[in-house]
Amino acid sequence: MTSTSSSERGSGLVMAAITMTVLLGMSGFAVDLGMLFVERRNDQSAADAGVLAGGLDLSLGVSVASNTAAEIIRTNLTTTYTDAEWSTAWGNCVDPEAFAFTGDVLGAATDCISADGLGTFRVVLPDQAVPTAFASVFGFEAFTTSATAEASLTIQGIGGVLPFAVLGSATTGSELCMRSSASGSAVAPCTGGASGNFGALEIGQWGNPAVGTESLPCQMNKSDQLTVNISVGIDHFVRIWDNPPGNVVDDCAKPFGPNSLPTFQGISGGLFEGLISGDVVSGSSFPGRLGRGNTGKVYVANNSGTHEIDNVPLWEYIKYGQTASQLPTSCHRETFEAMSHALAEANIPVCLLAYDAGTGYDILLDMDANGDDIPDVTLSPRFAIVPQFHELGFPSGNSGTLTIKGYRAVYVQGLYFSCNGGGCSTVVTPGTVADLQTISIPNGSSPLDQVSGFLLPHSAIDNNLIENGVDGNLGAHQIHLSK
Image: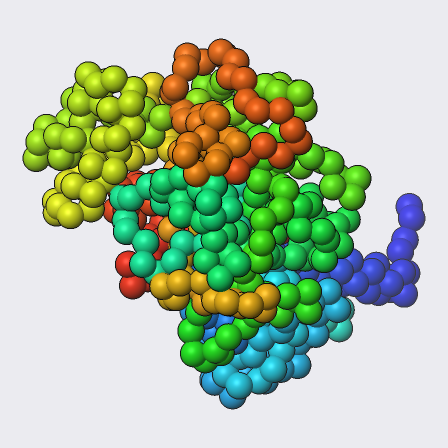
């Protein structure tokens, strides 16, 4: 018979108690970790919602955007803060990866909300304390968690903002001159230069990896600069003018959110390269804008090569079967298709002007919601966003700037080659010839003299394709989570 001493029995009880304590502690620790993960997920959702809301307010400045983001985050957190606690939390927050332009929350400066000037907005949530229920047994009174979110603004459509000026006097629905040839050579709708300006904007590259300009210098020769800005669009965030802040001139000092853009003095190359042939600039390849996208194409050819460009006229983005109450008769797809190509082109401004003047019409350029054969106009490389300015005319002198009133959508229409005032040797418009045909254009590396486009009514484009902004302006930017 084996007997157990009282000391052994006591040791066993102690071990059992210790084991039970450890097991209970571990179980409690698991419960606390579960609470931590729930808080972490909630923090991330709050940060995501905040960065998206704040990013949409970047046009109003980093301060407004940061306070918008912080307020949305605050309403989505489980912890309740007083205003003083909330501003202190942001004031004490540190982000070693903050962008150059930092914000503030309720007057407290913080680098945990920042913007980079290219269109990216960043939020790092101040540490959130999660009290423990069981882990205090191991000395953990509370856990902390945080979250990081980034959102990027992108221009709606295939490319960024085109570097062409739409003056405040431009008529919606009209065919406007986007870049004119020289006075004496220009043909309608262009009239030549005004105070040394021909319609282009002179914008430096800030170095945006999203569009391939990160290796480019800000200041380049005018031809290369225009090539790049047409090919991929202005590579940084520009915003509508307001006061405050007043004029923020776009230059190589890279201020946040320029709202005053310098005009392009004189005529240079770059128009043909940016729109049609593409080019290599500082070792980086930039395609011709009109050759991008999955649309019907035609070829233009000269001694510089054969180049593919879009060949889809605007009316092919209008759906069939509309009644007179849904769209003006001049805008019916069937109306265009019953005309010769020349008459159909002449009918485009008639349609757009009638649509803009009317009320209660359906969307002219609708979204392809059911996968039918009417594509979205924003998928066309001819569709583009351009800035419209307050000024009614171009400034004189080499340092003139224009202040942004809003954004407008245009449809690039006419390409005019070798113009002399009495006419042009070749004019290429979409649908002039059948797809995959070749059009011969004048020889030379930059034979394109001028470009025209139709100024589209805001209401003509489905809001699901391009959002309407405040005060009747076009919302040029879409925002999406990028981190």
